[in-house]
Image (cartoon, rainbow, N blue to C red; front, side, top):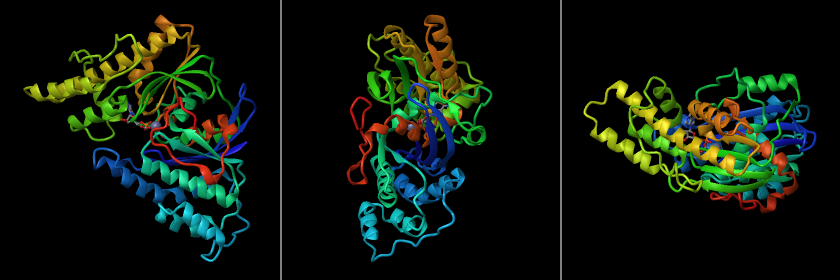
Length: 413
Ligand code: KG4
Ligand code: ZN
């Protein structure tokens, strides 16, 4: 089955094409293309993602990203340059109504996309939530427009489900990746040349710690597509805490990669920051108190030397890692998880990856521990296409698909 995936839930415009073969017990994947256009530089100026700018950039980027994804995958049919849909054509009106809230995207789509012959894909998978509503809707409506134009079914995907499924792909231990794991070039080149790769299936029950800019959740899976949220954050997400602390320290956006870098030469025991809810009987998290503790420390410190900054970054990172590791290990033991994994932007954090692995080996060695390749921790469409394959029973028509900014893993979509 060939799936085109589309992801626009936050500040990355991403499209990927995958071939997936085999059964759920032994799936194999071939990555034909995986394109990510990042808006991070634009949002960095504002210290965070600005939803209406994200929408504007997605409208600008989706068509070029699509053309590149089709071109790289080699599935674009070059021989027949068809005719673009003209204003008097009924398809023009329908496309216009699908994209009525995305007029810039419509204006780019008509000349560049409507003349293309339908590519050889079996379905279009798209992120329907959770995320920023204006950003999500651009991707969903673009997917609907393509599904209409090419007469293809749509598969709705939960963004967090995508993050979980990145753990199915083999992890290249020699690849330190780029700083925030956004570009997957080396990986895809390798993938294309080697053809189909076996996915490493999960042992159930499987436990995933999802840590991203918007979410922190411990999720238990009894099978693919079956998610139980054991606990989640009551205030800030882990990535959000990294971003806010980095902002307080004047380190820029996004905070995770820069805190990790600054923390490398700091002492993680220099400041005794709180570990909120670490010993609570539940699996919920809270990071806003920790953030406030860092704020007070910064305020009260006499002279904020470079070394003190490093120590604060390292101590903060350690406090976050300690809480995440302790709760994940306890959840794994309590629920007898056979596979334990992490997903989301913060899964790029080296301290977290390493210390969770060590803690599991020490306290729960029977679990198989997985981390995603660093090229796949950030938002991408490869993971959306992959999750789409597992959701292939949920095909929908372009007529009735919408975005849900607050979509949860434990409610159907
Ligand atoms: O999954 P993601 O790319 O976007 C969302 O779905 O939210 O996650 C982005 C988050 C940001 O908060 C960013 O600061 C954090 O992931 N992040 C990290 C690291 N790299 C990215 N946090 C800690 N350490 C990192 N190395
Ligand atoms: Zn994400």
